[in-house]
Length: 348
Image (cartoon, rainbow, N blue to C red; front, side, top):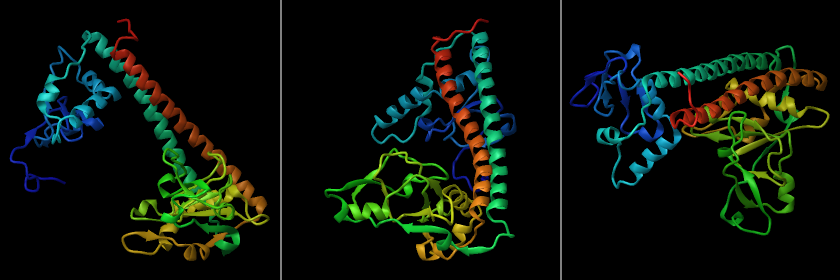
């Protein structure tokens, strides 16, 4: 906790509930807010300018909504970038900013409408988070059942390390998209930046991905990213390969099924089991040698299917809730823009 002894600022300012504040360093990231009741009486440095809002003219919450608009934040970012050596958006910049202010009743109606949407988003997020917690506990119970005997991971799954990136692969007749750890998240894929290397036909067979393969982040300086898994569902046209920063877990025909492999990898990440076997000090690495020796409680394929089906159903519900929250956020952005530029009007 910061104190007057640890803060180096020469002056500190006492904040009051309802003050409008912003962070001069991170304004382009949306660092604006209204001081809540629980921070009344707290202290702030001069990096957080404070303004007492005249509620007879403008509602503080309405003012905040204006500074949440993406186009406003883009303009602020452009101003900062356009001034050489400028590291802060200062009080003069804020005070010169023009905000269209409708009558108070309209301001209040706008804030009530947006607050109602925000309440729905918060409720969806909370429901998704709660159900996701239940899903994790159920996955741990079903995937790591002590009553099921263990086998080595390489007897349950086909585990392959990706190919090393090297300058000699930067050009060639078989340039192929490939995935790396930067593309893999916790059950998600980011395909906005997919690079290419030369993989000849034989290498494409070894390092190619097929739907159902699970990609696991082999190492990272961030402990929270070690073992992070996601399933490949054929989001891009084949061929597509993967780099050495990832390991591919694939079901073995007659032994395991892809959906169970996915949930086992998710469990190994969520439980910290992948991190536990990783070596290294600053950058942790699982390595294929450690991965293949991991114990796996592998039920028969019929039970694998039953377990995966139950977990997939719950996973689908969580995903649907998150999708709905995302959709509502997009709706909120359009609604807010329309209300503030008065292309959407409210009768008061």
